[in-house]
Length: 210
Image 1 (cartoon, helix red, strand yellow):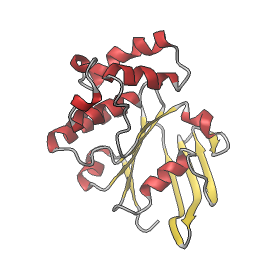
Image 2 (tube, one colour; image 1 turned 45 degrees about the vertical axis):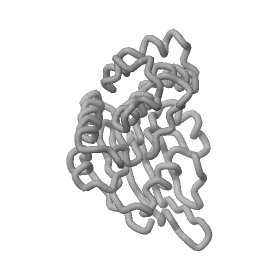
Image 3 (cartoon, rainbow, N blue to C red; image 1 turned 120 degrees about the horizontal axis):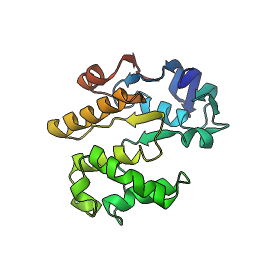
């Protein structure tokens, strides 16, 4: 079964059609790269697949569930790394993971049991009690990625995960994403970096003007 299947997907804002009838399918365990310039429609496509906005036409199926009809149920089984870090500055690194876990109905003891491995994955074990404002851009990005794994998702959406990072930070993120693929996770990656798509994606689609 495909982990994501999209058919005839369209979305229009006024006179501008930002998603113009696309088709795509993600196989379990692969990294699928959606490549294109800024404004191509990549983020809108991702938001449609998550059920955050409704399509004007087309069908979306995520982990066998129709979206947007059962989007909430589908989102409980997926992880999302948005384009901009939306970590809570009022909480520490560890508290960000703890609070986020509650959105999935996970008990505090269950989340606390998962946190050490996630911090190690993000190379942030020594920063568990640090405030978000004290982290570098690369650290924040790794924490956002770790947070997306709190519910042990089958499918992970990453929206331009390394934009704005320096080369060393990008390489660290790439290494983490490759380790997720080695664990059998399925990844939907949007990017405008050719080298990122080449390093991570098993297949790519090029998107431009919807």
